[in-house]
Length: 280
Image (cartoon, rainbow, N blue to C red; front, side, top):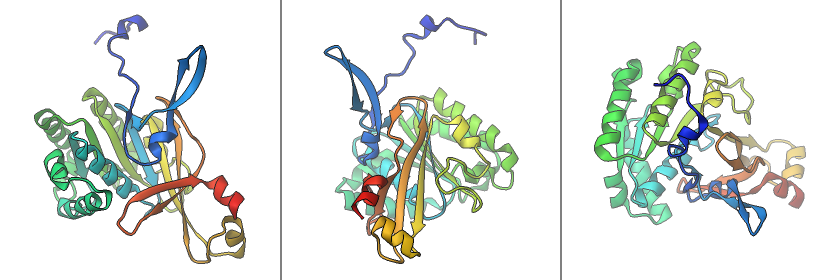
């Protein structure tokens, strides 16, 4: 590889900027600026940026895995191949979760069966302990099955008990996914001491500093009168929030949004938090 290169030499190598649909409000929360009739206008990207590597982080039970699974199901239903690396849960459980997603979203589950490829790093300790073996298997799957989207749930599980190496490990996977020209989601977990709505996760800011963007998911238990007055929600309910913390590839809505998780496990982004507060 050349030690340096002129900017103009990259003209034909730069990826096009467009969205890979999630079929959630996120598709509108990423945007680009285009010139129309001599004026610059903001246009929704229509999905997460093509060939981006995004981090979804949050405390437990905020919907991180649900959102990742939903993205996988939508892409597979559209006919695109998805590689799902399951680090936390055996893949047999993922089959049932994706079948339920397909039924709830009105998707063709046969397409999901055909287009989603699984790697079980939860049950195969070799994948977690020898990252070269995992990456080699991922590369074989990407090439053999013509994969265009990758999900790792969770990237945190690949540096358990060795968080000092988090930055190095995340960089290895980031570079690999870029080399393979994948659109990817890395799910990362927060430690209990970390700010709920920051981009920080286990391993510190290692993931957020390296990836192209971070989506932070949070939840707040309504347990005081002040909260019930502020949000207009009943005592004992849960307020769920989602925010794009940053994205180096394209513009994004940086407001905090309210979302719900339906009984079928579907993530449904509703409205900006400010609107909820104003209406309470």
